[in-house]
Length: 347
Image 1 (cartoon, one colour):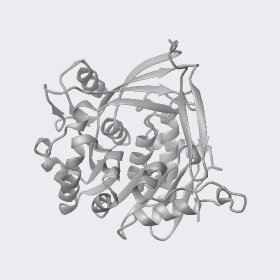
Image 2 (cartoon, helix red, strand yellow):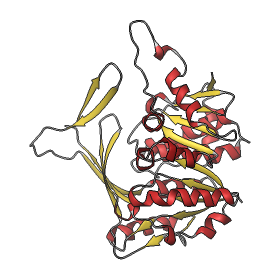
Image 3 (cartoon, one colour):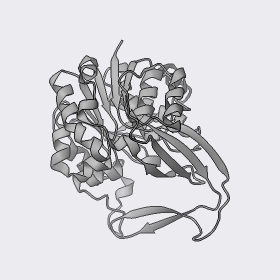
């Protein structure tokens, strides 16, 4: 059985939905932005409230285990009421926890997720222990023993362990899937490039890819209709720019517009798999980790792996909670078989 180890964050997530929330769109010549807003200075009733466990390290570990891989997780928590909730949540998950880091002198990560009426969300995050992982706290032997290491975004001081763990994994033949976070990206492309050279699979959303490469996605103008193309030319530039080694596959997710990939020869586009949207939290983690897992399942079929990832991501957004809707490979394949018209495209 393939061994996978994940490293990333672990949080207690509180979901809040309010019917009084507004979505405000602002468009300029070079950029489109959306904002969630509430009446200023008002007391607002909550429409829906729930709590669950999340974080990139937790979400992806649960997904890999659910897909049938031997899975271990590295994340850091405190010793408090939130850490108890996180550890209790793993009792029903087939994930090894002998590599987690637990310290009394820090607080467990905590997030408040503001959910819009469209199902999208804004996250207010207290990083806590997630931003305090130190190199000497990591079990490097577990990384060496794994066939695959999934690196979820590492924030704050934890970002300093990124280079040594990636270098160690690469040196010992552990394949790497890298999902960059804003802390890494803000350190500049030359820093990210060092990581990219060792990563076999790189997954970012469009905003992160834009920050990494410095390439802005231009809106349509009177004379140029970029939206009519299967893949925006600026997105293609991002994909090519981030592919720094021949063996890499680069993926850019684009929310409700789908996802794109590039393997050095072919550009791929995969639309979103149709599904009701309750909350988008965890959709990116489900997509990225499923894509990595599906590449093995499909024998490196990039387009089909994007479809697997989209189906599992759609399952997650249909439930409240980042790991509640996770599907097995068999369930994903059943949904694909039931929707033969759904497919990827090449450009």
